[in-house]
Length: 280
Image (cartoon, rainbow, N blue to C red; front, side, top):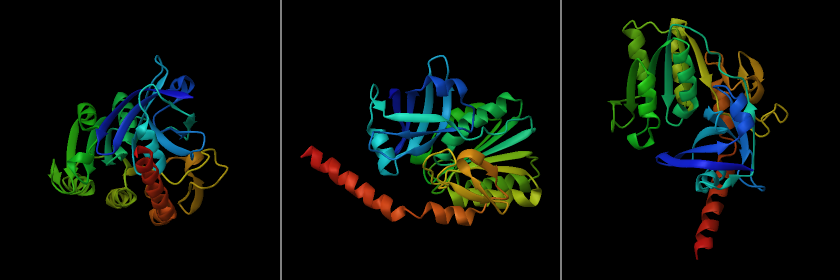
């Protein structure tokens, strides 16, 4: 059992929790993730580690309540426990001194990238951050990312905060203006990551996408998280989750991630009905 020692709401349906996991906290590196079950009857889901505190033996997880399991996780209060948690899993992101690194984050993708951004900054890179969301109520880690960035650009699709438009438009503008970018790291919706790769490809900029495909066991056994990278099948849980964005087959990834949308919606409806019945 892994006890939740802190919980807070960051934005609409986006929550941050700190969980006791001493062994994971001691070993985890930026880019890695955990697989957890909320209760003994629950499904296993992967969640990116957003930070660690080895001295306290805790890890930080930021997640959006989009499915039944994440909604159950969001209902847990401080002092309550997660049934079980395994990690750290996956390969850490490659952190080196590239020069100027650009972080492109969409929505909850900021949670995937914040710890990585800190690592790149600590390595002596100049950091450009482009953070975006559909609207201001879905922005997370804005102050935290701004505080470590040399250049910070904020966008919202509806113009409710920052520039009105897409993160990819802001990225394209920087490159068109002659900004020298040596490395791009992106996380967020699949169409956004695909477009980031399309923007940087003509410039030959090394671009890495942090993927979040369907995953079950997290150890390479089930094959549920397979993605095609450079024409070869890779497993995100053991080969990733970070891959060369110019080589990822984003169309296939999108199709695979949508396979269970109907089942997920049925599960959400049943969960809501159970909660309503429990209140009566």
